[in-house]
Image (tube, rainbow, N blue to C red):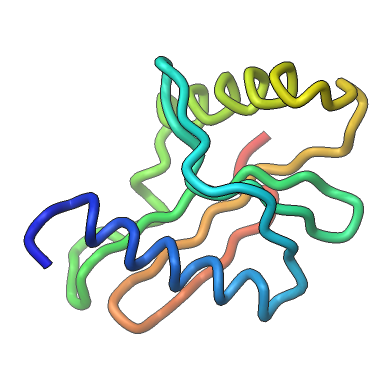
Length: 115
């Protein structure tokens, strides 16, 4: 796999399988707007979850989780607002922002990773 999109797709598929095995219902993948993209949108319990997937090779100095900085969080939040408007989802719907960090063979799911 030589291109980032292929690698990203592979690990998003790994993340989706992990989420399904942990009680999530996948609604949509790669929701894209001109301001950014959300990797996975899913339902978990009563929450609509907007999920960012980060992958790092085994032995990387920094875990994928730390790549979701304030700027990336703001982008995900704004894309989530666009998604909810586009899909006519009520503004009082319980939402959550989760992150899946895939570091080599280790998968970490952080629920409610940022406000």
